[in-house]
Length: 423
Image (cartoon, rainbow, N blue to C red; front, side):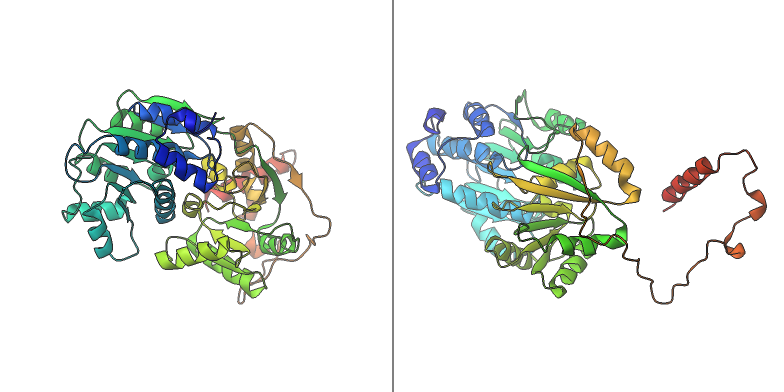
C-alpha cells in the first residue's frame, strides 16, 4: 500500500513525499478512502499511529476538488489542547504546501486580534472549544459553508467537560456536514456522542482499544511515597533515560517536581494549564531540541505532546484512570520506535494497579533496583510531633480492643481500608 493507491491528488502526494513519508499507517490506509467518499467516520486508534494525517489528508483532497457551497470556513477541526491545535496546523501546512489553502489556529492564552483576522480568510480552522466559542459569540465565526467537522481526541474532550461547548457550536453548523470523530477509546460516552453528532458513521478501528502500543516496554516499581523522587533521580543517573516525560496528577506538583529536578542538576521544565502558551511552547521546543532532558506534565498535557524520540515515560503519580495510562505511555514507542514506560506504585495503589492490568489484559513486570537504598527514612516536617504507637493517649477507646479469638489481622486490614476512604 502506498499513498498513491489512496487516490490522493498529486499536489498532496508531492508534499507527502517531501516530508519523507513512504507508506500510510493502518489507520490512514483504512480511514482515508472512507472519508474521501464523504462518509461520517469514527476512527479508533492508539496515539502515535498517524491519526492526524488520517483526517487532514482527505480534508485537503476534498477542499481542493470541490467549490465552496457558501461563504465562511469550510472545515473545522476541534481539539482539546493548544499544543494539539498548533501541531495539527503545522501538519496541514506541510501537506498543503502546494495548494492554496488558508489556515487559522484558534486557542486561548494569546491575543484574539490576530486570530480574528485569520478567521476572515480561513478555509480550515483548527481550534480549542473555549476560545472558538468566545469568538463565535463575538460574531467572528461564519460556518454557513462548513463542509467537514472533525472532533479530535474526542474522549479527552469529554473528560475535560467540553460537551456543552460542542453542542453550542453544532447548533451553528449546517446539518448536511460530514462529521469525523477520532479517539483512542470507544467508551459508552463516545458511542453516545456519535449518535448525537453523526449520521450512520462508519467505524474504523485499528488495534485493541485497550492495548497500549506493543513497542512500549512496561514495568512497575513498588515504592514508598517519600522515595519516589530519590528513585527518579537514581534512575536518571542512567544515560539510557535520555529524553524523559514524567507525569504527575496536579499542576502544582508538576512545577514543584521540575524545580526539584533542576536544582538536582537535571534540566527540566513543567508543562500544564497554568503556564502561558508561550511558556508551554518554549518548554516543548527546548525538549524537542534536546536542551531539556525531562519534561514534567499532567494528563491534560499528555494529549498535547507529539514528539518523536522520547525514550522513557515515567508515571511519577499513578494515573487516575486506566485510559490515562494508555495515553501517557503512548508518548514513547511512536512511529515503530521502541520505548520504556516506568510506573511508581505506592502501597495505597495496589488495587488500582490490579484493575489496570485487567484493563490492558496483561501483567506489568515488577522491578527492584538492588543499587537503590529503599531504607531512606521519611522526612519529618518541622513542628510535626512524632506519635508513639504505644502512646495510651493516641489509642481511641482502648476498652474496645479485640477479644481473644478474634482475627486481629482482619480487623487491621479493614481499618486500613476505612482510613483510605476517609482521606
